[in-house]
Length: 336
Image 1: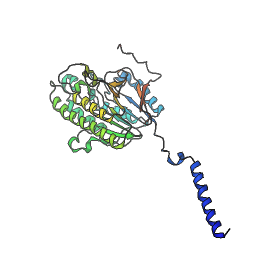
Image 2 (image 1 turned 90 degrees about the vertical axis):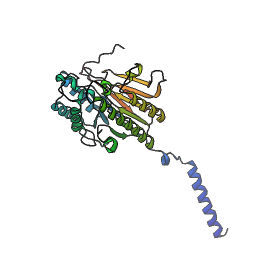
Image 3 (image 1 turned 180 degrees about the vertical axis):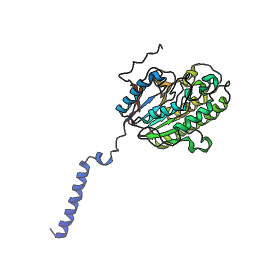
Image 4 (image 1 turned 60 degrees about the horizontal axis):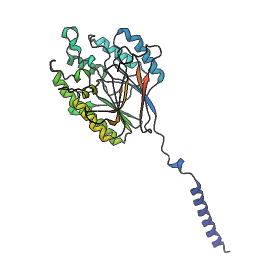
């Protein structure tokens, strides 16, 4: 055989052998995407609720540190509605938040500002205390806690720049946001000077913020969305109440969650009971929206929290349950 022919046959054999080895090789190592991040967060609200609960509250904070969640969210109401507000207590609450090792995000409750006119014979102005809350907790675009994380806040929107408390962040392919929705009918209170005007402005800002959170989720291809707020708004769905302060908020969440069609978690406080419901009804005679889950925190004398495991690779995305503090009194079960 001529040398040139031998060289040609050798090249052909090399090509055939390489192709055969490629067919036998597994492509997984070259093409597999990294697994989605699995993590947990903690939520709590309506606490400490009085000096008698301070020790139990500090035990809860220590338990949160022991569990080392990715972040913690306080859903408002750091004091009872009957306690007069003080700047010293606002600072004390901030100190508690900063004692947590992980980032802490807070959304205000009605007891911090909306209802202060009910204390000290009406000598406290709710709007003055709303300003103090914003100054104490929301001066910067980052969380609290020993290891703060950056946040996107509504101050970036010129139309709603005063609503610095509405915040958004992402982790593991999931979008999280706080929305300033509070009890006492979301401050839609005609009998309180200036309340209705405040409510209308904040209600519009909240609707815009909810839409922005879902827009971010769609743009990022997020696996889920979680919203945090203080009020329990769903009780109004089953009552034919004129002038509900939650109508626009619920309608906005319903429309966005329906269009998103992926898991949506709504975390709130207010009613002082642990509650986990999947499939929420946004209108009295409507069918429940299957992709929306409501999680309510413990509160008042039940000094415990809830913990949520977030698994973007799971169809459910959010898996929630109680976080009970061993040395604190067991929760009181609701009658219904």
